Image 1 (cartoon, rainbow, N blue to C red):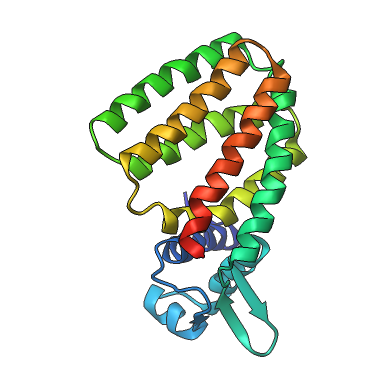
Image 2: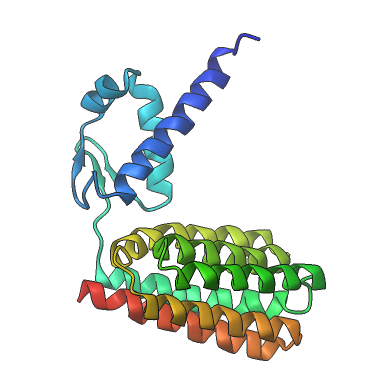
Amino acid sequence: MKKNGPTKRKLITEDIYTVIKDQIYSYSLSPGQKINIDQMARDLNVSNIPIREALTRLASEGLVHIIPYKGVTVAEMSLQELDELYELRIELEGFAARKATLLIPEAEINWLHEEMKQRYFSIESCKGNLETVMQMNVELHGTILKYAHNENLRKLIEQFLQRIERYLIYARRDLDIETVKKEWSEHQEIIMALKERNHQMAEKLMRTHISNSHQRTRRFFL
């Protein structure tokens, strides 16, 4: 079936959005670098329109800055922004953990518990440390956000997480095993609080975990 114009352009825009975002996260596009839309259009063999649409979406996520009549630049990274994002994350994810503790099905908690066991084997084998941490975060934090049953809360936290991810990727390029084990242990403690349906402890442990993550990341930007 032949795609109509708007649908095809939407798909192109989505692809370009992914390409540019990957370039930002991999530092192929550096913080503060000006993005040459005309050159990018030539490199990707597309018109300027889907590139501008993709950049508008990235601007809404705080990854680029669009300055009228001056152009588009990759958002700078700063210690102040990192601190502010984590400050918000501690409050919001602590609340999400407290709310979700009594709502997560037992089967989901058991699944998380088993997944954490598998992640530990990955740590012990010294393979994919960054990937292991990222996957643990997706599994635990994603499940908590899902069962907090608050769509606006989920979207807000995910927006902050996207902006923090750029800092995490930079800081965790050379993760040592001991740091990964600390991350694993903190996740495991939260899961045990979920199993016990202790919402106050789950909130406390989530706050502590995010605060520790903040400090582990922050030292790379001092």
